[in-house]
Length: 64
Image (cartoon, rainbow, N blue to C red; front, top):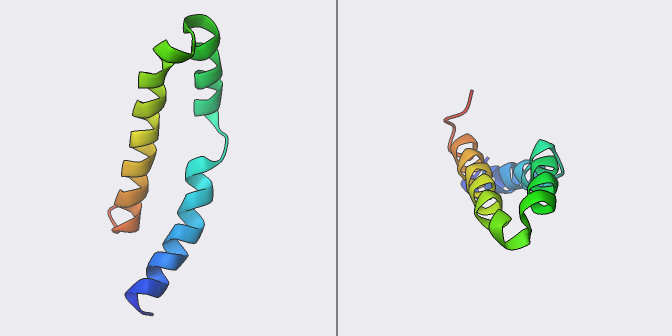
């Protein structure tokens, strides 16, 4: 397999996992309800950065 084929396979698997609903969405909803949207943005950004970072680590072969 070429590098581009491996990237497409990785992206096809990881993209839905990163954007799919999960426990983080419950945290987002609870934070938004209790603190408001603007004060919840750092939490949302932080969790999204972790998801992207973890996806990149897995993509480069450093996962479990």
